[in-house]
Length: 248
Image 1 (tube, one colour):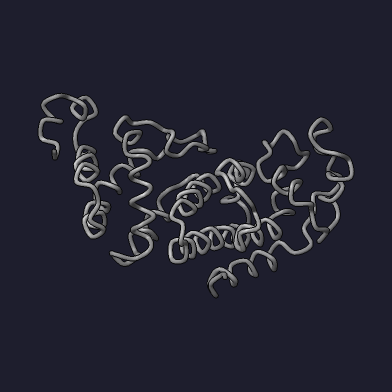
Image 2: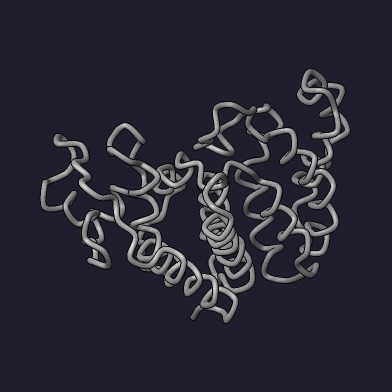
């Protein structure tokens, strides 16, 4: 069940983007059927789930007006993301929104998108019984907005010992080796190629915030040791001398 804040964010998306279309859209003739593309020119028409998913991750060259296409699908997309109907979510599924440059849209539109993503992430942190789902939503939000900053800030605001810490423990367990190796796989779909990927910011945040939260969960001492290695230069993280200090 969605939270009041998430419900309000979805309703804001509906209101701001109501009736928007991509007029005369021809789409990609190899990927989209004419009747599917025609829905983008029809205000309020519901897209089949598989068509919505396909449109949501398309590259800009697949549309005559990529930004208009993203505005057109946003109400239905936000609804399905919020209520969990967007099955088997992957960060890749929001690359279309991530490539749209929505941050430069008119302030009301950009604000509605940002508010929805933040509300979706906060709701996920506070409600997920399955931490794995939170890791996916985090990556999807980063993909959609090409920033980790607001989502890490929301994570840090959550109470120590709460549901968010279970999500953090899983995230660190899954990604710590890649983080130590400076691998960008942690944020697999970075859509803003004018800026560097945010790996250093993510590493610094985990180094600062994860240890206390992991200790509160009685996490594996080796995992805590690995988190501490993020403070070292890359070349020192894997030496025999460094690992001689690891917990037995």
